[in-house]
Length: 249
Image 1 (tube, rainbow, N blue to C red):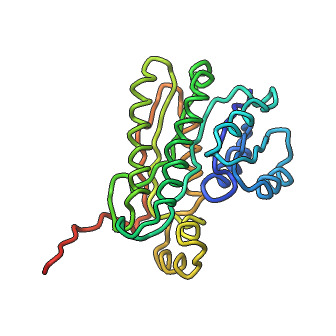
Image 2 (image 1 turned 135 degrees about the horizontal axis):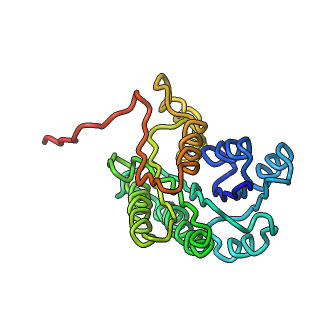
Image 3 (image 1 turned 180 degrees about the vertical axis):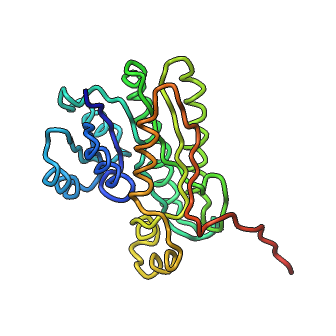
């Protein structure tokens, strides 16, 4: 029998690529995101037999509950949760940052992720399923302007480890996937749509693609049930660890 996976942030980037990857492998997929027109395009392409879409803002707990309550019967037995929805906003140093952007990142990357996970834990325990949280190398390696975004991803990584500890003995697997540079809409969102900034960041770097990360999500989700990848840190070969900053003056 086909398994069921719920993927948040499914309208672009890693999420959209993961939806395609799992559908191609015969899974039932629940795809959620804010942009209804993109979810509709997925549905138009793949049909509704194995794909269910739900358009809502992941930060809206009432909308999240309503979407889960409205799942068709064939999609209620969720085996894998992929907490992919998240974003970075702004590149300014902390002392010049926009507090509203900080709050939006915390609400999306931390609060919404924890809320959805808490809601689905009983089902995942019952089905001895898996939780795959999309963190970032920004949660381990600081850089100028990373401030709250890096802090939210550090939470995702540590929350994953805590879940792993708490779920000991239930059979539920928990993985934190921590990508480095990948060319998606990420930088466009972060810079308010600055295509030139996005092009400069990725120029000549041969960054990872959304499909690369979707392949890793699929790999983790399809491991034998007695194996758990705790953390999976992945970068393009062109990216490595930066040196320390030194101010002289």
